Length: 310
Image (cartoon, rainbow, N blue to C red):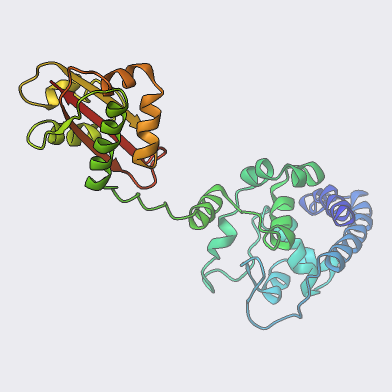
């Protein structure tokens, strides 16, 4: 690519030659000599860039989307033909590098609709977006456009910011669907096992068994088990005390836990915690309700609540 760029730069350095085609006197011979050099450079550029087509009787759409009529261009620009001949390849390279900027037409007026892709190239964007190209070629819009047409498009480079934004949006992954709401699952058999395990502990210490309170403590514990999946605390999500979940509050106690997979493991953990152990072995407590829920996919998954009363 560096060899190609050197040829491009040599061509651009000679761009002023045709712009000064009306000079007189001794400048004429200098111009002709320079034109011969530019012709050689254009031929070299053609060999490097691979532009290759024969003179055609009708306009032809080039790889960059430009509609170009070599016969028309040669006929309407005799100064170019005088300098370089009427080779279609040279006509096209001249148009891309110089002719377009000089206001020359690629086709006869009204013969075709100008290509939209040819007008969508943003040289300032291209130079800023691809500093490797700008470092080699500089900021000449014609050179940048020629690089895009011959190399950049095939390399996946973008002609303007809107084109890049559209490509980025098209390739963006679809948003992940929102996770389905998870409904906690209750297991009444676990609840009764907790009651039996606690009574076994109380029996080992000579204490009377706790009775199951199906009308008050059990429903309250079930509510609390749901609540601690949201706020793991003895304070309810609305900020009130945990004991407001049951009726007729008297002497009450609450144990909560999360993460234990079985009734045995949760009772064992409670018995190894002084505060929880004190509730289970409190001789003043005579009734018990237990709540348990399982939340699939949750960090802890298993949530447990005991509600005691006298």
